[in-house]
Image (cartoon, rainbow, N blue to C red; front, side, top):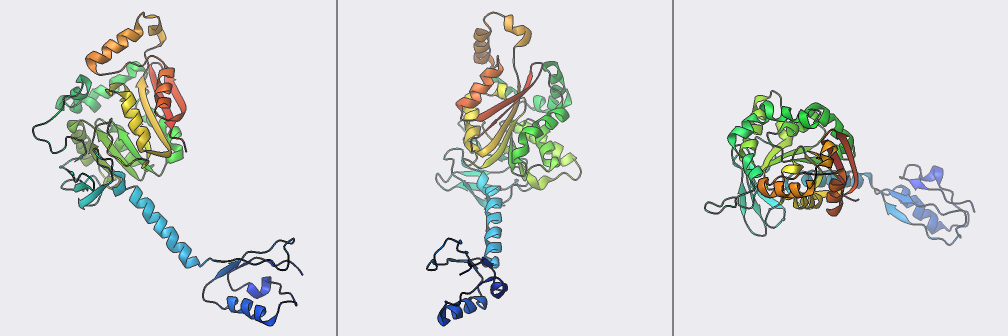
Amino acid sequence: MPPAMAVIGNTSLFSNLTLSPSLNRSTRLFFISVAFSPTNFRLRAASASSSPSSTATFVDTNPTDSIVAEKEKEKENEVKHSSNLLACPVCYDSLNWTSHPSLSVDAIAGSSLQCGTCKKTYVGNQTHLDLTVTTGAKSYGEPMPFTTEFFRLPLISALYERGWRQSFVWGGYPGPEKEFELMKEFLKPVLGGNIIDASCASGLFSRLFAKSGWFSLVVALDYSENMLKQCYEFIQQEENFPKENITLVRADISRLPFVSSSVDAVHAGAALHCWPSPLAAVAEISRVLRPGGVFVATTIIIDGPFIVVPFRSTFSQSFKQVSGSNLFLSERELEELCSACGLVGFKCIRNGFFVMISATKPS
């Protein structure tokens, strides 16, 4: 008996299926009924070595069901990239919208979210959504290190893109446009997903990400309210800015308000050395990254001619205690920082003291 051939759909059943004369009448009628059934089936062909008594397996392949399944999957992905991204910074559980369910920068004002576990409510103001642990507290607050508080000053936020950032060329920073071009190579595996621009300052790179169309959602995140207000003003001043795919969030870098494994990429431009605890921050970044997610950051390394300076390590520790900032002394130090937080595939680009690093969450 010739081997049975695979049949897809009901229109080609008679032309492709070889029926053995040994098949009885009831079996023949069964195959004919399949051909005219309103539901489509696929017959898995038996191999040439199969015995005549082998049982054929029928699987439902209704194309309508497949389309519905694909649409449901797309909707599920959309949800993952929108409302389910945000989490309570206390419980890390997904936040539920109680009004204005949108992450558009123009929809944040008046928006409200609530944690399903601790029932704490987080409300958006005119410019950004405040997702810090102390949100809503009127009498309690904790002072942050000097560097963190320094960037909360209105004057610093106003000066950041009006001369401050441009001065970084002394350390080898190639400029925003070149940096943006360099980081794209690292971000290629996750283009089309979402990205957190951590410690975004006045949103220089957040706005570039939004206008590039590389990502479905850009979250401009900073601890400084004034930096976020400045970012909002810049966005409002630009014509035809894609406001629908960017949102501004105030948060602590060491307690990120995002669901675990929900973020495709995190970028931190000239910020790593400003964080009170880079280890706690990168550990949080690793937590929120999806498997295969990418972390890209720029900072400075005090090496080169400074390598001969005695007691560099001691000076670095003293500097951190006084200012709250960090001095990185080698590429190896940054690689070990990423490795300690579960990130792999460390890469870096150097230009003088400037370094751009990249690491990935294991798949």
